[in-house]
Image 1 (cartoon, rainbow, N blue to C red):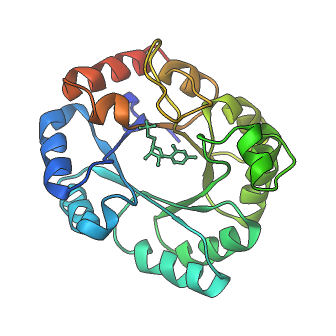
Image 2: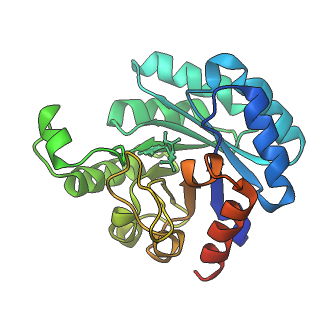
Length: 231
Ligand code: C5P
């Protein structure tokens, strides 16, 4: 699968209102082709904004991280499948991923599994009862994602190379936790630059605050795209 350099960047529209999100997309204009809409916008008109973006020819990634019983996940994914978004996330538990694969069957929607949130490190995992370190858990879940028949995973950039090595052809590896050198990490703990993430095997990167909270979002997006171009 071949992607243009700018199709590899999803800008996370993590903003309080659709008006602010729409204003950001207008500021970014033609320089950004792909957007991620997540839980912050979902209850306040996020799907209407997704519709507008899709109708304007943008790629939309719905980061809803579904996690429920099989039947509910399957039906929820089916509800999203005809919408025209490119990507939808579910949690990377085998039963959830199998249900997502069924729900997305026959559509163009790519469903991908969130392996381990990039804000979690070993100490956080211990606290919730996982005794594997993040890398081990991510690898197990990436293998399970392929076995369950979904289209890819979300991981930190630090695991992208190992996942890519054993992954089926066209497997999506989407990495948040992306920062330019010297950028503020926020709550992200496992980070890399756009160049390193893509060079390691990520198919797409997600960048939120470094663009959506920048004083000049367009310049920030262009700096990320310039870094990507090097990959
Ligand atoms: O602002 P920042 O660049 O850290 O945003 C990263 C985005 O990626 C957020 O929207 C966050 O919800 C999402 N994400 C993540 N880690 C995952 C899955 C999604 O940070 N494992």
